[in-house]
Image (cartoon, rainbow, N blue to C red):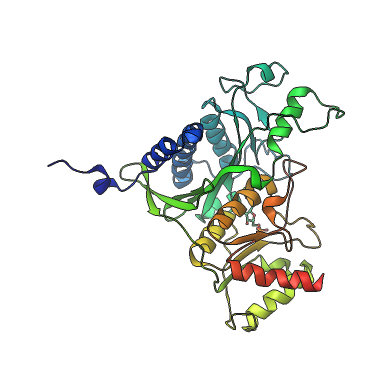
Length: 362
Ligand code: AHM
Ligand code: MG
């Protein structure tokens, strides 16, 4: 008798995407974007695991600094190139925007970056990809988990950036493609590089997680239909900023520490300092994670477009909530590519409890 492939391998991500595209023909282009994302994530996983052996730890030799004033690490630059190249040549993308690129890149039909108005005639790519190639990279040399975060939008047909702006048409179209609220995301996800490499994503119909089986080099479905517990018992914030936090958040965390929150239980503290790892734990175990506003960073630290919005989409799709304090993150339309936003997300009842402090105290 024949051996059933799925009995041997489980459901691979490739098979999942093929079936998805067969049932939903409008998603066939997203399927090929995902195939590039998964190849890039396998490559990045390998680079991260072997970085000490290959001598690609530490800062860029050139001492380069990205547009947000952060020192770039060798791995930031390499992983950005891996993801950019993988996505570029699908021919399905009109624009890509990355934490490590100063401005979004407009692509022609062959996936080449173009900086002239000619590209508007040539570009048929329907989609826009936004990403942070190696989030938490400050941790990577100590073997602490890191991750890739990505989001995929459709490109709007009309350019929504004001014609009066002193900018050429291509640049304006490129920005208009990019500056979309989370509610417009077609798909979003992350890949966690930790004790295992796990790709978790949503296409707006729930959340699924696939673990890289290193023996066969394929992602296989290990976490079908992830649902975040309605309440957890972990809070996850960088508490060294506590003296600068908003008062409602200080009061809320005080209550959790004293066991005087709605659940009556004393919460534990867990904070990895890599958003992907902290969100992954929150999705699976429940609880609340955040990078709130503080007196020094009025908009927090996390970037709306390629960190907060994709994670908000995932968390909502898993049954949780993602807010700035009072406001839903998914509704925010970025004004700038690298705009920051306070971000507090997690279990439905925990985040709703936190929101009450913001509503009554401010
Ligand atoms: P990065 O994109 O430059 O790596 O910064 C984002 C990271 C997140 O992964 C994490 O949640 C946060 O920064 C941690 O910041 P802090 O060290 O201030 O706690
Ligand atoms: Mg980041």
